[in-house]
Image (tube, rainbow over all chains, first blue to last red; front, side, top):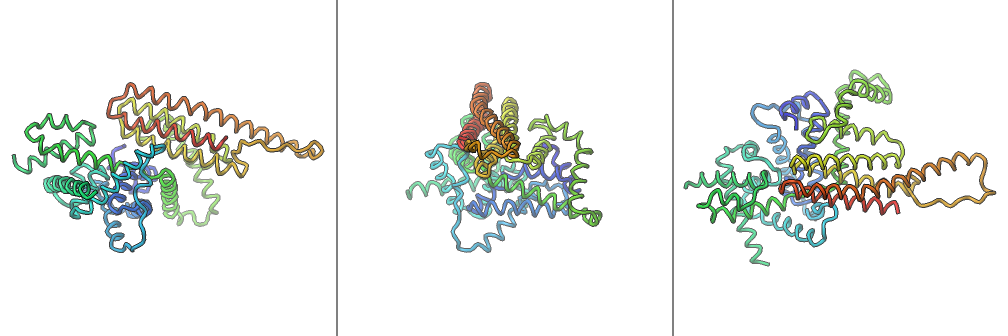
Length: 181
Length: 278
């Protein structure tokens, strides 16, 4: 991708193509991050669109100042998720499983993959909020540790420690699931 | 070793595993003393990385992209309305298209041959979207989608040759969107007389009015075009997966999974499109 800072600068000046490039770069990452955190396909799709519309409306207020665009964008997603979880009603959710299999994936493979995702989503509920955030940003959002630290407002050392404890907790949660089955 | 040092080693191994495509064993070889503590964590991390590697539905991706582009245009239009408020809307649209065609033709031309690793690639994708929208008939759109699928496969071969799995995945998603749209055009539009290949019953000689001669020629020409589309798709359905499979022999291991997915998307996409034309 073209230098991100210059793209953001152009997007701030209403350059459509620059914003479209940023959209293409981050669309999947934001979708996965949202989907893993809320565990509902339909809501994740709606919210992913909301993230980009909100970003589009407020891009002129973005100032680089050492905080990368990704941190700003994921922060928008994080705030929307917090609002959503606060208001979430008791209506049935649409599992993540359906959008997962690509193209003509074998049904058996699809079933195994579905198990993985459902188990993962369930296991992340055993984590603290901060641990869940690190897992979502690092693995679903594919952010390097420095950017995870920016999004979370922590230093890199603290995030690395959190990452360690999160993976260990996730492992324990998955093993507990195995024992229960 | 302090816990901070271990946290750094774990993070380094995660980068090597998830970003550079190295194996757990390679990481453990670098840190034999920490291997017993590292291994279970890396296995969990790898499983997590694989589980979250899911894609948005192609229909959602296409719809979201369209809506986002519309929002972009609306926003741009809103910021200029004060200057062009007196201008009829259709005239504004025509003027914008003309300005883009004239002023942007250099960039657009330069972008037309760009590859996914070029800054102009997104201009190329955007230009294709504009062309698709401006293409009048469902059959024309389907033909254009078929040519786009051909381009996408060329691009996948190019980025796979560069050993770039991320870009292979990105272009594969574009290929998936393209083939899904192609199927949708050839199936739903077919019922409206757009891309249907089923022969229309010929009218009895007494029913043929002189003014229907032109219509008859048009129908013949359309059917001819549809047949050409079907033949082109049949050819692509064999040649594209074959070319991708051939490439599989020479790409680095880190790119294989992405390329295998491209093969699956290509096979499945053409099979679906061809079924709608049967």
